[in-house]
Image (cartoon, rainbow, N blue to C red; front, top):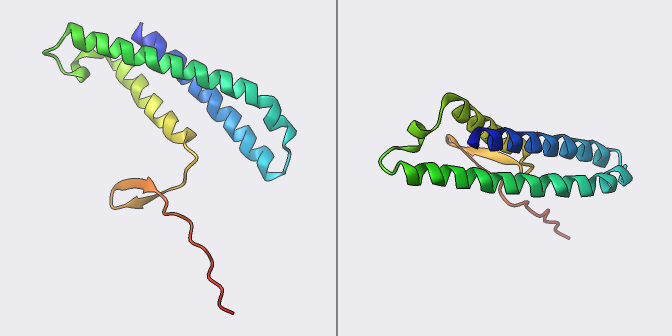
Length: 119
């Protein structure tokens, strides 16, 4: 069941990425009406993804409860590990907040600075 929820969540997430990319392209050319047309679909996909994410969390919690002495990596098969990795990567793709590197860590960009003008 966990594998099914992971694949389903990945599908919703990829749809959200596609919709967001379309929104970005429309913003670039000031074409706002298609964005509004996609808004309901985007909200539905987001709710669906959140529900599936909750199911994934529940399935993982159930696995851990049923096997309290085992570590999570031991409880998942290769396909599930791969799906979790894909989910993490796709979430990074969806993120729109610019990041920068501080050492080996990605962090949100610093706040915008204001232009100071002296008169």
